[in-house]
Length: 431
Image (cartoon, rainbow, N blue to C red; front, top):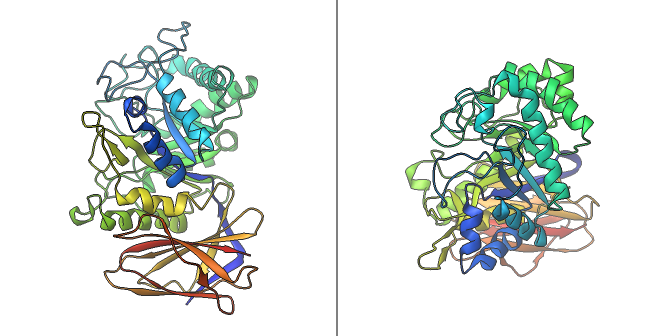
C-alpha cells in the first residue's frame, strides 16, 4: 500500500513545458492544423511553460531549422524585428493554459565572441561581458515593453560544455561566476529587470552541473545572482539525483531540455505506449529523485518525426502525428499546475509508481500512477479523509488518450483500483 503524507511537503512545482526554437514556431504557424496543435500542447497536455531561444543572428541552417535574428547585429545597433514567430507562439500559449515564457541563449551575437561566429563553440570575449549583460537586459525589457510579455526567466548559456555546428558557446565555471556576479546581476538591478537568472543548462546531470554550481555556491555574491539551477538530461553519464548545495541555498532546479535523443534503449523508442511510459517514468524520476520544480521537453512540435517532439507536423501533407508521450506528459502537466507542491509518498512498490501533489489552497490532491508492466496491477493508496468520497481519473494507455474514467469510490480514506497494463492514470481528489 502507498501512503500519501499531506503534512510532508516537498518542492513547489513551477510547471511543465515545451520549446519551439529554431523556427519550429514558424513551421507550426504555417501549418493548416496549427490551432489543433496549439490546443494539444497547451490545453490537452496542459504545458504551462514555453522555452524560447534568444536570437543570435547566425548564418548556419535555413528557414526550416536555423538561427533567429539578434536584437543587436552590430555593437550599439539595435533592431527588434525578425522574431515574430516566437512572439506569436508565446501569445498563443498564454491564450491557452500556458502561464510562463522563458528564454535561453544558445550563443551571443558573433561580434561578442572569440571565434567571431555563433556556431562551433567559441567563448564570450572578456571585453564584451558588460555588452552581453546589457544585451540580456535589453532583451527582457523589450519583450515586456514592446510585446507585452514578461519573461519569467532567462538563461545566459545553453549547454556551455558542448561545441556544436549550430549555435553554441563555451563557458567554464569561473567565467560564468564572474559574469553573473560582476556584470549581469548589477545590470539587472540597475535596469529593474525581474526575470530570474537560470544557469548553467549543461548537457547532462549531475556532475556537469556541479562543475558550475560548486563555484557559484562558494561565493555569496554569485549565489545571490543566480535564482534557478537549470540542467539537461542527455548522455549516458546522466545521474538523476539532488544537485549539491541547492537545498542549502534555497535554489529551485529546472530540467529545461530532454527528448528522444540518446536517452533510451532502442526498444523504448517510437510513438507508442512503451515510449509514453518511458517518458512518464522519466518525469517521475526527475520529480522524486532530483526534486525538480519544472520539467521541459524539447520541441513541442516540429517538422521532424524522430522523437524530438510531442507533436510531429508535416507541411507537405498538412497532417500531424500525435505520439503517446504527449498524453503521458499531459498526465502530469495538465493536472499538476504551477504552485502545487509534491508530497511524500511512502510504501512505494517496485512494480508501479505513484506521485502525489497538493494544490496551493490544499483543497485538491492529484495522484499520478504509472503501471509499466504488460499485465494489470493494483493501485492501493491511503489518501486520508476527503470531502468528496470519489476520485476522478484520466488515463493514457494503448487505447486511451487522457480518457476520463467513471468516478472511483474511496473507502475509509483509501483508493483501490486495478491499473491496466502499460498505463498512466491521473487521479483528482477533492479534500
